[in-house]
Image (cartoon, rainbow, N blue to C red; front, side, top):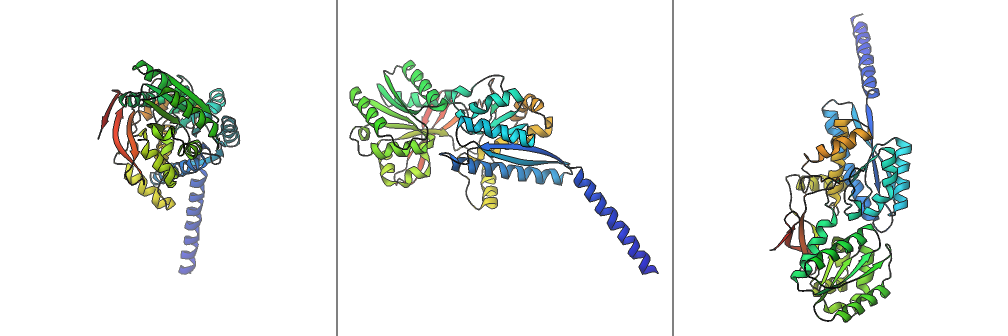
Length: 400
């Protein structure tokens, strides 16, 4: 009889416990975090790695929320921008309309961000962009926050300073025909000429192009026309840089001048081709990219990423991780509401120290702290070594 009573008590207690757990699960409130990035196209590898950075951030925040007894959990809803402005608009609309997401990490490039901008602004959706830097995206009062990577107004000054310090009297620029490339070309030209530089001949190419022989011929002819003391600046994404290098490495003019190039040209795939690597080394190629300065969180992020995905994070993946954290911290403070997040996000961002730098936003909602590293090809052609630094807030260059 005693055993039977104990059994009944046990069953009743188990039932109550299971019911409480079920009720607790029912009380969980889910906040959807959109992830709108290029998972295909020329920047597909970047988008896929950025998504992993967001996934790591979400998993860590959810674990902390559970440990704290919070009823809130974050869930990811992803869509592929296909690396086009139109694709970015479709991707954001799909995520929002199918899940009710109020905040999105991404799109990635400035052209994608601008493609999604109208839908975001009209529907009160907040875009937290981890790597967009084009000058065209610096718009006050909109729903776009570029929280980690500073706008190209700083980088264009750095490149102009380098060209002038190298003694270039005239410059030739090959650039993407998109908001990022056009903006960098315009900013560089203005700063170069304001500093005493001469003529700048600019040539645009279509994003995604994989054959640039005609553009290479035009650049070569312009450089030859300028004569001595001319330099070359390539504002190119990876596929364009590879296509240009394929032709440039056998061009006697292009292999006789000094080069500068944007950070996409530091991808490992560039140096994997020995001919391309040697061409850049011979050209004293230099690029301006975010500084390798670190915070106490830098190595922790790398270790956690390795533990979760069994690989090292790709270039700028930590910016997606930081952007996701800023987005989620703001949602936790303001609620799952786009208007409230828009109001609160600058305050949260300005108190956030991430894996590379403190976020601090300007009047356009863009990162205002600009600390860049200067990188050149190593002697053994295996990597890009940091050879100096550019402080965008003081407009000064120092070399190691």
